[in-house]
Length: 368
Image (tube, rainbow, N blue to C red; front, top):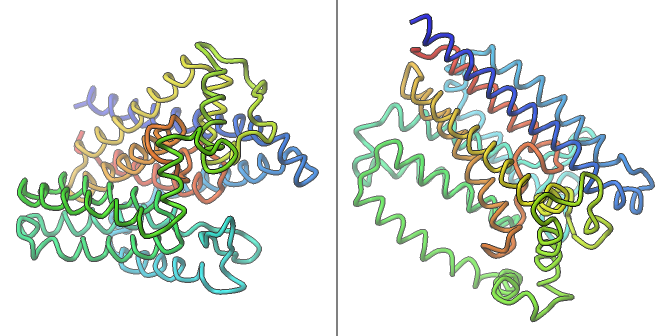
């Protein structure tokens, strides 16, 4: 028993070290990717770095706080948290509160601080699903029992897709699907919803002209090298320029206004250029280890709720990381989604660190 407890403590320490490394490395890469554009647009090369450091410090406070708060308390507030997320998702369309950027309403401004509600929504959905599935294990074997979680996930997906943000919608959908599978959904329903989800993708793409343009740019970016294909081409230039071991930290060429959103959605391209294939693969392995550890924490949780909650957090990190890297490498059509813990974005890094804090508390109360 004592050896198991030591192993559990090592697991917690390793999770903490990985997260601290990722956010620290993220600050370095955010500065590297944004220093030129920040100085060009804002007259301050540290503009994005300061915002990222603020998010990391806030996230560290959240991580410590939630690591000491019994995760069962969150279960009692799941409906309130969901309601707050729904309200925030609706507020992005309210003039004076919602903030529009590049034709998308994804942020709200409260007391001078910008917040991206969809980042909070991912984990609010995980909390709800973990709670519902842990309490209704037998009911979800039927289609009727699956209706409540699918209804909640559907409402959140609709609110996110009309922002519009197809990337976050895909993340929510994937996480919901995998959590239902882990929670005990039958094979018959798994196949049914897989088919329905696959049929919805072309409908969503056809419903918006800009998505069609992105699809064509993905299929042949060289058809419009100065248009829709520009970002993907520049991303591939960066990855190709990195070679095996990269050009060195702070030496990226693509960050000089060639690659749009170099500090946020496409920061992995800058990482690939500066750290090379070797550094990129190492980073992916670190993410894989983190997700594995979160699943291990879930499997050793003292109850079903803790298990699903920790696995759900691991799913969000894993799915979002894979989607981001797939976009940057041209494996799927371009869509905006930050790289967890690393991409520029205070809300994202703070919320992800808070979720890690919850997982640490689950580990503290584990049966090991």
